[in-house]
Length: 323
Image 1 (spheres, helix red, strand yellow):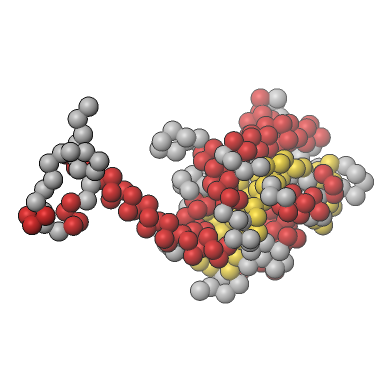
Image 2 (spheres, one colour):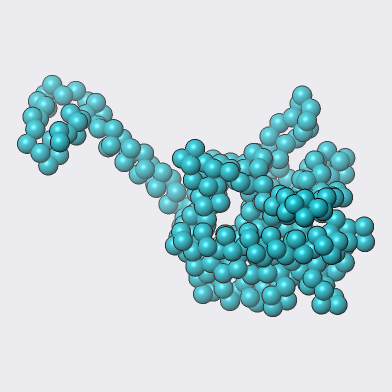
């Protein structure tokens, strides 16, 4: 098999160009060498960030709307799992909190239950609560755990009802069997993290009477991040980030925003209903001690890595003081 002209000369007896007439060194770089150089640049840029964040705690909320395939045909959730495994391998302590809203709605409709929402939160009767259990504990959680394990990092599925992880109080009675997080017992998470595992949390909580309740995954992620004293809280969703003046001719993606502006957007009802729980939980997490929160488009390949390990980052960053 003949070698391409650009590759002849490394370990072969092919003709070598005359150095005097070869031109600049850059002119002689093969496409393979250029690709290797680009990879080296990426590693060089990432190294300071890897060093900085090693040992830190990151809570990642993986939204149920983050679905589909990447350009290369790889499922989005498999690519996400590989990135989680990489974060763990370079020394970050990672907790995944997942939702499953679209899957719950789809199964509900198949069973003749029409989904209902109030201010972005699911109305959960007893029949719907059973669907929530089936989807979160029987489908989404085992799949994510399996994918992360397959990618090379030990992952363990955890329900909010395990070891008192999510203690909840009844939410608005109009929502039915829905709970608001009242306390987070991180014992089970601490044990898994200390042993090098990635906890994957399904958001079903335990009420004061021992009953199970559906918990909004955005709210749960914020509460878990605050309880762990996480350095970063990251929401992966199906939008590029948080928009100012969304739905108008003046809409603009916010790359960075302070809590005061978020509160203003909540007060003026500027946010889409589905964004309200995310913004509320971001604010609660920051007030609870989390340094920074992010809203990223999880459909972008390596969104997590781009945010954590590059100089530019992507999406929207929320911090106590904008840089």
